[in-house]
Length: 188
Image (cartoon, rainbow, N blue to C red; front, top):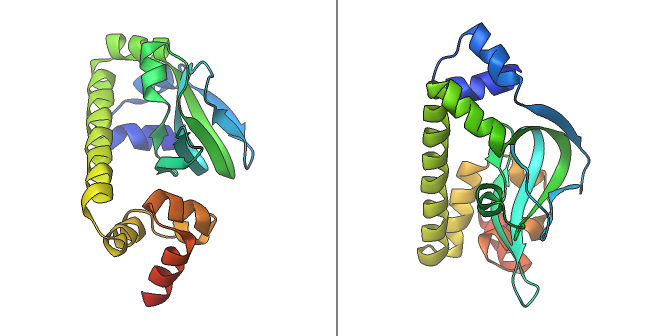
């Protein structure tokens, strides 16, 4: 409950009573390494707050190539948001790369929290705005930056992650081959 509170209080303060009310909308789920929270074609009833572990959010192109949209570490929210908000089937996968725990929130719960606590409506708005800005920056990096610039930005935004997940996954995230990642790693 403390991690959820600190996540919320990065945006807005909450009282103990408000926190107890907020917490009642969440459920805890333990996740094993390589377990999927979401797979393509699934219903997506939850958005998740990572309490521990590392998760990758990705999709498969028609040619079978994996495109990693983001990594989610502790204190990071994730879902297949198109499917979550539009009550559609998932087009993404969310895979646990390192065993952990997540808090699960339904869309109905999110809407109830927003309606009953306006500071939570503000929280969700700020959080999604920040997520949108981060995603926009990621697209810009992929389209405009060199492999070295993307690698350096990855190291800055995800310190220590390179040692915790397979290099081929990092290479896929950066849009480079494994050999290029090895050259970048050795040159830094």
